[in-house]
Amino acid sequence: MPLNQQDKKTIIEKVNKICHSALSVVIVEFKNISVNTITKLRKEALKNDVYIHIIRNTLLKIAFNKTEFECLNTVLKGSILVAFSMKHPGSAMRILQVYEKEFNNLKIVNVAFEGKLLEKQEILQLALMPTHLEAVSRFIFTIQEAAIGKLIRLLHSIRNKKEKNK
Image (tube, rainbow, N blue to C red):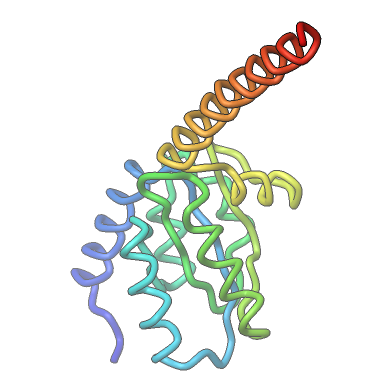
């Protein structure tokens, strides 16, 4: 069913509003993907604060105008799915990389972060970037390891001194 003018304006406004609060955008090309797969992808994305939308390219280009994701207008071709990362810039990439490996008909085309298109290596770095919680837990683990290491060295040196004194 074709969209009327008001429906198109509503979609454009909604996506434009999301663009202003999103941290990164991933463009994914898809073909012959079942509705069940897309639904499963959307459910997983919602758990990770990622907004996924399938929208016509012309409407998406209008929605991207005057946002930091305007640079993506040049790569909008074919059947695409758009994923907006809302809390962590790499969360959409993490989810979509798993699905890209699982389904051959799903291909990550491009990613925009901080107003620029990312190269392949930068996209991988973005996906591997730890979340705030992961970074804090790694930091705490490192501090614990350092403290335990010092304790072990101290106990080892005390044992060596006692053995020498015997």
